[in-house]
Image (cartoon, rainbow, N blue to C red; front, side):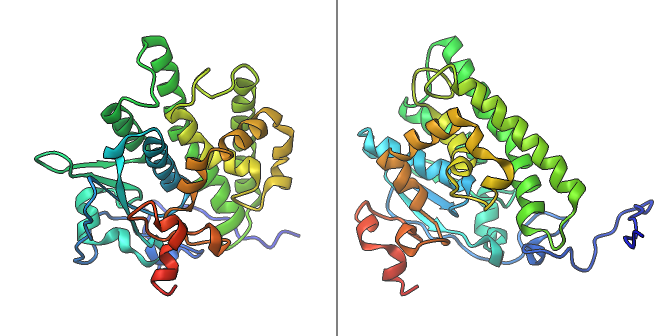
Length: 289
């Protein structure tokens, strides 16, 4: 006997008093700031406001790769935004990203500050600013951008879909988990077939496409996010696993993964980054956290 009461959507939806789950306290159906809060601004040309989620890691990896390649203008301050506390709804953050999502970037290297939001847009902005990690030849550039936007379009299935219902939802709903697990596995297969042909996602060269995709699918393949590797049988995607390992060997990727990270082994966390020396000093230790 099935005791589950089916949900029949009303004619007009109204928000529940609590949606339940880990992020219930910050979910709301309207945009805009909830409180006045100015953002801190450091001395470097680039100011990043973020958290060490996969979308945040994309940008910190890019910045660390730029610095490793000798682009001194990519020096940056990375400020921690604790989304579980609603800091992304402060007036200063909303002024940079009206969508109230991390990451958000402020480029103050020119006469007027430039705001950039959405992780894919930030990667492309930085690539064009420093003429790095994006091909210039038309066909190669198109391939790179196609994979960049593939990731931007597919991440909601992996993060907001599978990740939410598998790890964060207040109750396990088989239909939802099966639906998103099927799509995540299809996406892994897309990526695995591509990486059987080429060493990097866009072809022979390491690009922003790799930097966008690795924090989501690469970390999943390495077991660095979601305790779902066995459930999804990620080890069977051998080309993805090999590519994920190759990128993880890059020092800039390891550094980028640490920035604004607040979970896991304390040795892997750097809550804020204001100088390269912070990787040795550990910002959270400075703050007594």
